[in-house]
Each structure stands twice: as structure tokens, then as C-alpha cells.
Length: 191
Image (tube, one colour):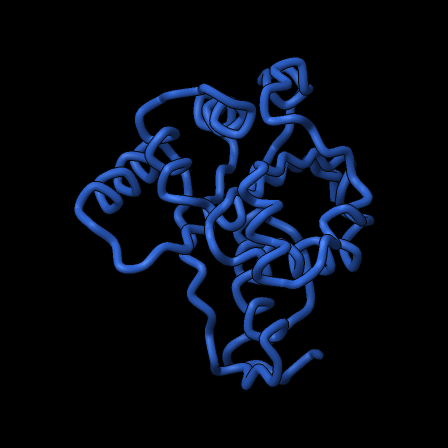
């Protein structure tokens, strides 16, 4: 299997637990990854601190790029990053991507993924959704992006909030094309 280049963006939407669990899960599939670049908005840091009562985002062991760093490698299609995951994805970020507004590194990198026909996975966390949100999701889907709502599953019988978040993260990593072990419907539990 060819190793992948991955961009992870964390916005200020509620749901920092999903990003935290994603980084933890990535440790188990590091052998499938060539490079990871991270973008984290200022609001994402504030929400992380508020929701998780810590600043463990400072422990992320991958390069974190400033939101205005348009010299980041994944700001261009020539760097050949295959996948971008925005987790959690705010409706504001989703709307700017749907409108083609590349006013920061997250939206620029997302635009690159769409124009290069690569994987863009948006883990939308807002609820309820209004018609503008739904239309923006439709636009992104028609452009080739994947909307993966942060809706956990329960058939694996998660025991903790991290287990619950992991049901979404596993789905995201499946969509990104990584090979990982985890609960599969109709199969014996591999955890």
C-alpha cells in the first residue's frame, strides 16, 4: 500500500473530541501515512480547551500550519496531498468551501482537494440544519466532497465518550481509504 499525505483541519465547531480521537487513532495507522499537515483555527483551540478541559492540542506531533500560511505545501495541488479531513467542520467553513471562498488555509486546501478531484471529508457537527446548510452540503457533494456528519453509531456498544467518538473517526478513516481494525457490522468484534 502506498503511504498517503493527509491534511487535517480543526475548526471551532463543537466536537473537539472527534479531532482528539482522530489523532489518537492515527497512531495505530502511522505506517500508512507519509505526511500529515494540520491546520487549527483560534476558535478551535478555544473550543478544545472549553470542551475537553485541557490544551492537549499542543501535544499534536505533526506540523501545525498557521491559518494564513498560503505557502503550506497542501495549498497547491502539486504537493499531491491525497486527502483532507475537516473535523469538526463548522457550518461557516462548510459554507465558504461550497461558495469557493478560499480566504484562509483551510478553505484553500479544501478548494485544492476539490479541483484536483481528491478526497475532501467534512465532519459536520451542527444540528439542526437549515436549508442553507443543506444546500451547501449538496454543493460540496456535487463537487466531489464527502459530508460525514458527526453522528456516532451504537451497534458496537461503546462504553465511553471516546468509544462513541471513535465510531465516527473509524468511519472517516474508512472513507479516507485507510486500513484499520474496528467493529464491522456482521463480523466478530476485532477490538
